[in-house]
Length: 143
Image (cartoon, rainbow, N blue to C red):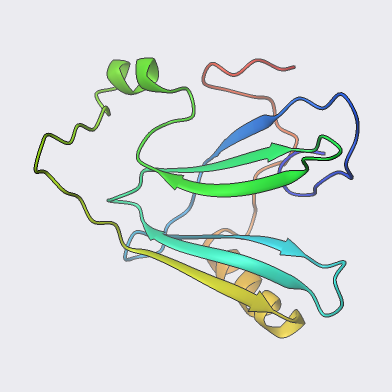
């Protein structure tokens, strides 16, 4: 079903990774959430991160029965890995003694009101989200 609506667990599933085209606010902050409306009142987990620090938003999903899971992952690197990062000048190295800090906020969206408030804030930034079933790009195969 794409990235916007998740499927029920099934057999013979192949894991999927999406690299989202994100929209940031004026402070270059990006927000994303996973929401389950089937729970009474609704429940979600939201993340907010600085696009200067974490350039990509990945969504990993595996709908295999018995190991069903979905993850949203802000990342310094593309899902295509080291060759992609090297080819695009994005490979980040930390040498001995180096350190790096990231500003990341994780929040629980509890209930319809918090979910609706989050969605309204996102829709102000991206009123017309992309087609959740659009064709893969950037080196990803179609199946």
